[in-house]
Image 1 (spheres, helix red, strand yellow):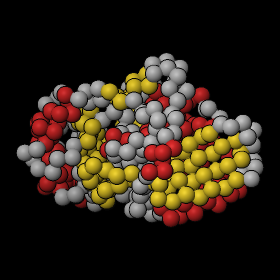
Image 2 (cartoon, rainbow, N blue to C red):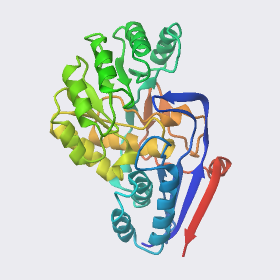
Image 3 (cartoon, rainbow, N blue to C red):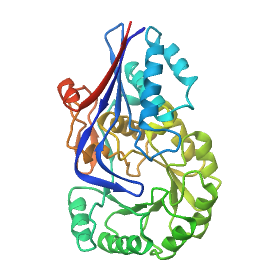
Image 4 (cartoon, rainbow, N blue to C red):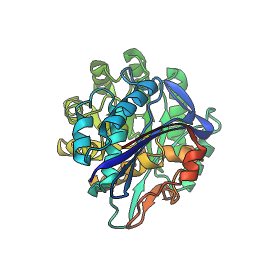
Length: 359
């Protein structure tokens, strides 16, 4: 089969309420959707969301230019030739590479993406309440909605973070797993102060306390923490997973599809975590339905039972699929044979730019 068309759709998906993380407050999600068509009439979709401030090496503008250059290059190639061509540039823009490769994986109906039996993939819920008084009510709502894992964003002010963490921990009262995520925003000193003030039981993990490239700082915090540490932004490759496995106190690693370079590489990396005695978790909280569907399928393929974090599609009320990604009682629910179908009218309604490459 030969690739006859590649279209890049730049989207802006509104959020009903802002989503605040340590380095950014999102008011929209702005992914690039890659559409690839072959000479058999089949279509594959891939997604790249490269937020400003997420990576020192990639920007939205750089990712889009990379997609344009590689899209122009692969038109007319076979899918295997296209994979090789994109692979030659894999380190230039990993998140843009993922969008192109996953579109090819969907086009060729990669076995990881096929749902051969009814499957549920549990997700976590994020605490968005800003005041201590609002947190318990929000937690109760999440529990009533069927969520079994709840996550609190920290990485701001240590005293305030501890107050919100303790309030959340008390309100959860063992009724759900409790995670926290610093989004790599603490200094070593602040992270040490934060973990020193936490309850010693009832917290599943603290995610990425310090800068993604400062492995020494994260290791220092892990050694001192009574709460297991999960590395996220530090993890791009199998080698990163193996490196994390050598650090005392780092018991979890998380991989977002957009950093992995495709579903095959994602499952390889997280599968390696299991082999070396770590818990691997998959999911991107700022992806749309295509990316989160692929992450859900990867989670199911690997047999991961810990709650996934691919809940970005729940944060926006924009649905891009004609058969929206099914969600019920705290879980993505994929019935046998589920395969996404793009709603082209919805796509156009949220599109702010397009590039088309064809024979």
